[in-house]
Length: 219
Image (cartoon, rainbow, N blue to C red; front, top):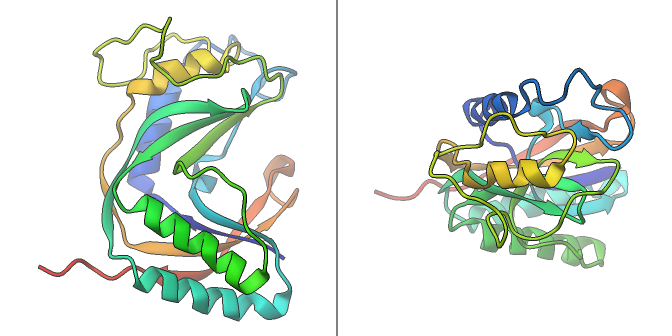
């Protein structure tokens, strides 16, 4: 089975992001389907998560070991405040929203170390915590940080409406550069089983198979 460790933002946080994306998309798609060549494939809001570590294919007999190991990882990291903030592109194809909060880096590091310890393989992944919202088939987007040279930043407190989201993922990333969602407390890590092609429309199906609680901060 294919497993990864993740944090699931609360529904209110995901709804806030989806409302912002709805404003951005608006009539920008011009009636075009999201699965046309060169367009964006949007991640279903209910499947959006912050991946901490990807463990890959794991034998069924290792499920309890990974779950107990994730319990130990979570127990070492107190709950912390987080928020979805900013956006960018990976490999000119993957559109993501960033995550603010001081607790992400050590939690991700220990979760990745768990995979190395139990499965004997190190994970080569970006250390930046993020939530994937869409992927582009065309890969025509520009790389580079949102709000960099040549981009215009407006003090709007959120994304710009009327952006041609489907035509230009980079433009959408720039529009989301000022996005700031509501804060929430990261108090739980989940172990997720991913079944490729088993979800709606051929998307992956994600099922939570274990939950690990982060201790509350005293006081």
